[in-house]
Length: 354
Image (cartoon, rainbow, N blue to C red; front, side, top):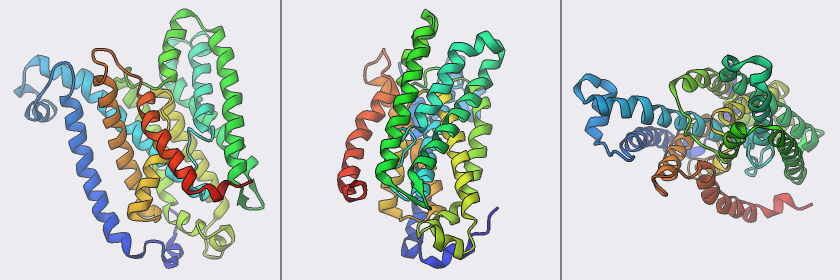
């Protein structure tokens, strides 16, 4: 793990560190409660006692309740935790990398790159590699798509160690448009079955949650999280500028490359299993930064927890608001996140003046 002790001397934590630690504890408790409520909610309502017993002592509940918890609701809730945490964590990393609160995987084209690669795998993968390879082909393909988009964006927006926010946003729009054009071509090539899957998948959904998906997804997300946590203190120094960070002993180039790989890994994996879910990565880190401050040693784990809470809650809304039908979760997060993004944009409008 990178030694980032010099960054601790720059006063990032301030007197908010105690508040941040309390926030982490509170978010952990809130996540546990939200998960229990999520598993309770559905066409067949369950009590909290039944849910807890079904998880820890399944022999103590009816077979029907066991099946509902273990086969349907628990994997879906856990997938929401993984995807929400990964997207929020990616947003916090990107905002630290670009040193701007407007950075988000969905807004600047990273999710579009992952989505294009994942759709390529859906349309062409089975014919080329066989159905058995699809479980791992989706996350691997989405990772490389997100990685390519992130690298391109960084090269476009960064010059002489300084990132132009206007160029970042405009470059992200261009990358997203290019990826959407490629996606349109693939959709035109797809058959009826693939088209139905892509239509719902492109709006974001956790309806396909299963234990094999969770098992395939978890290692990729854990690696991405570990890469991000290893450089948490380095982002504190990077907030002062790249030259200042180098003087504090931070290997800036290694930090930036690692952050790019981590963002691509987390975003690509999330997109591969849930489709395109926007605005989680911008809403969560910004809210937390207002409350606990910009110290990434606290901001990153707090983003992980709050992102999971947010997506578990959004998933509950998506599957109950138009019951028995299901509203794509990407629509729910967009309805909540788009106004918040506009507020951030207006609040920071001076940053994007051309």
